[in-house]
Amino acid sequence: MPLTEEERAQVARLVDAQGDGRKFRDPDFPHARASLAVELREDVRGWRRPRKIAEKPQLFVDGISHHDVQQGRLGDCWFLAAATALAQYPDLIRQVMPEDQPLCGSDYHGIIVARFWRMGHWVSVYIDDKLPIDEDNDLVYGQCTTSNEFWLPLLEKAFAKFHGNYENIVGGFSSEAFLSLTGFVVEDFYLAEMPARDLHRLFRCELKNQSVIACATMTEEDRKGLPGLHAYTVTGVGSLRLGDGLVRLVRVRNPHATGEWEGAWSDSDPNWNEIDGQKLEELGYEKQDDGQFWIKMSHFRKHFPEVWLAARLPDFGDDYETLARQSFVVSHCWDVGLNAGGSDCSDPKFLTNPQFTLIVPQRDEPERKSEEDDEESESEEEEIGDIVIQLIQEQDRSKYQDLNSIGILIFEVADAEARRLTPALLDGLAPAKGSQPPLTQSSVVARARLRPGTHIVVPCTGEPDVARRFLLRVYSRKPVTFFS
Figure (tube, rainbow, N blue to C red):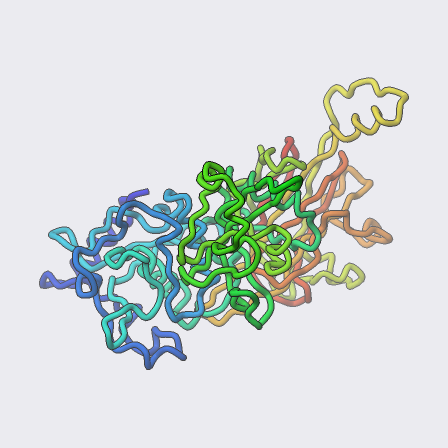
């Protein structure tokens, strides 16, 4: 996606304000210690434009690839793992980093525009193209693996400005980065709860649908070449016949662009010698020290217990291929003393929370039910409303704003005319299966299979009296009614 007319106009204003034909210098993100990561301030010996770092610099060289990304000394693997995932689908990178921005030549003005998604809207961020360098004129933070390619370090700098400075993007979860880079529906999957076969099918189908997937090691110690507390990108899946068995594999990439798994099915594992050359080519196996490696699914689940997946639309059903057909978006907030009621249903404050009505309709012409139990079950199954609800809380790292615990509680009510929970309706009523108890995350997702009737959806914080803006997105496979 090229620069919009509004972005071009703003670039022109910034260039004109610079005056005297000088290249743009961003007054809002100074080349000073305050913009840097605290522990790396002494590593930075200056700021240089790409044309002073490499010959013939370009934003993109020979297209866009997930192999472009190389982490520097900054602890932002959570962001770079997400950027790596996006780079598998070049249009996703072009959405956040428009390609019609020269780094040299007559149309070069020293200004770069990047975009990040926040609370339902794309925000344009304007930076100059000066980057922190060390005493050897090498980039201190992220870089591209091709020396004259600069989309990654400039995107990283824009993300740092988006959050105040480089220090504010040290540490995080790829789920948050996925939201900022795509605006997609982001879900967490805890792999101990999912069979290997289902996980393999999920990865295969979601990658086919151009979803993006990241994972992380959750222990502090290094294990078999995998650094502790480090984010990675899932770039593919495959399976191989070995003897009488089927080996399910996951392809993973380290944003450092080096350092790989050293266990079974690593690049140097003799098992690969047993595989036919054509199958290796189909799988995309390459023995290179590039940070990308294959790992057996059982080992993947052991070393990467949590996965973050971002999809344009959520899927439904066991095949992971039926996508949402209807959606609703609501922007709202919790205000202290008004509607910040927390998640404790026994607390009278709970009923002050924002509440939304979701009606799953009966079928217009229900078929005659068979007397056989299995056919009756199938008929009831057709009436079920599959719902995915995403709750996103506003967070501003530049204001050192911590994440709150947030959740989505769903209640099925007998009164079809009910529009809010009352003490009488709530008495003895438990949240429906599929509700999401509060978690301390930037966004949470509830997946529910709701019977026909009226349901009340309550987005809430874990504790009462917490103020925060939020966005609620509702997706359904079949038509439903949703309103506040």
